[in-house]
Image 1: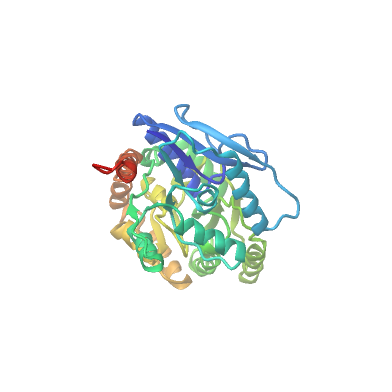
Image 2 (image 1 turned 90 degrees about the vertical axis):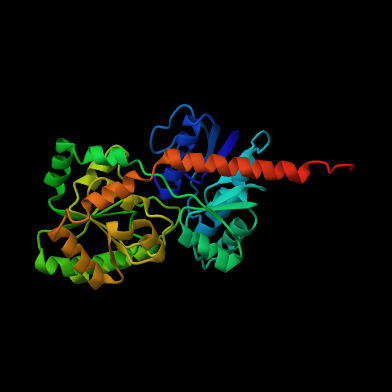
Length: 371
């Protein structure tokens, strides 16, 4: 099959990580795969090297000073739509709201369901759910949201996890030493400072933790995003000052550096308020790091008995304290869980779905007997 996977960015966000890993696994399985995306801010390539078996089409998307989020989203859609030609592809698979709006007929993966307040974004989000002819989710919980909210029956194919990459990082003594000498003992969160990541709740939990563990650091990594979270960041900084704590904000981390940063953490906090799977937390489990995650149906589904769960800052503080006191208690279960999710399995499931969809399409256009 000739497959186009569409994404919205070259930056290291979860959906982009998913797109590249899936593309490489599909190519390894013998499929002809091209990834289409927007090259934001002058990017001419992705945040990491991509297997040369995967073709890349990176559409220039220069920044514009003073452009608000709504205008940027609409320009993103129009730019990708103008560049992408679906002719010749057997499957066009959009991985996000922007790329689903940019193509007329596609398969759509709904990683999680957003709730916007800007009229342009609400309209884009609705079209990106209603117009695709087939839908995928990476967890049953998100598929159930689609069913209840839109009457859409989605297939469920979980994420893969590059678990070996994080397992090896846990054995890299020099890498672990480098981060620990720089940061000390730390709780890590990956994803930046933004509302969906629940960072303010984590800040409150950290202040509670510091009361009994004053040498513990909170480290925040990542943060590439299309959205403007400056107001939320200002609230975060003001609240940190009120609480008398100073989290270490690393920002985006190089691809090769991330596994050792994760593996060197004493615990991994995952307070997101909306998720489709929780790939960053699953990578932490692969590295043998205890995980405390928000108590959401989707995360209960994915992590089961391999993680600790909390609903509010006090709960996060208590569960992080327990994880720090007994770091090995869930380790075997966590590493086994992460190892069970592979991109090869995910790609094989996608291939079966694509073939089914192509067969259904051929049946629809086939002439009726005697017609």
